[in-house]
Length: 191
Image (cartoon, rainbow, N blue to C red; front, side, top):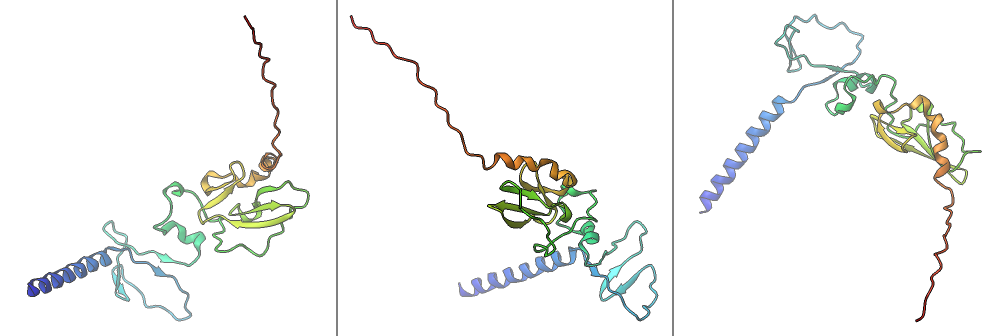
């Protein structure tokens, strides 16, 4: 019984490592582009660098992409790029990781509400409440939609015209008015 359990455990371990090795080899290999002051050796159409094989572009090739580390360029090869953004040019999109420091937005004279930051391509938006500005950041690949007050795919947002919809904040903090209608008079008849 103990020997059978040991053999099954060993078989499971070998199977798991074989599957893991097979999956590891099927993943795309990316290289980070770097600059160098030394000359690099000339490469033929088919060469091997650091164990990563690159082939020429002759139809049956597996070309690896050189990543630059610049998201405005590398998004094209991002495996997590949402399909809704296929073909959309993101070269002007900021790809912020944190709220930027250079924000000049003022809440003075504005209604309490939400406001897209056009200088930051609407990835940043502001919530003005009692004259105080609170800054928020939409996730990468999204921007703040002034019409609906949500972060949506950047391809669906007209960021440049967001100021035209700032008036939508007017209705957010209006006091609700209640009007009651008097019930119709009731009549009772006695017989």
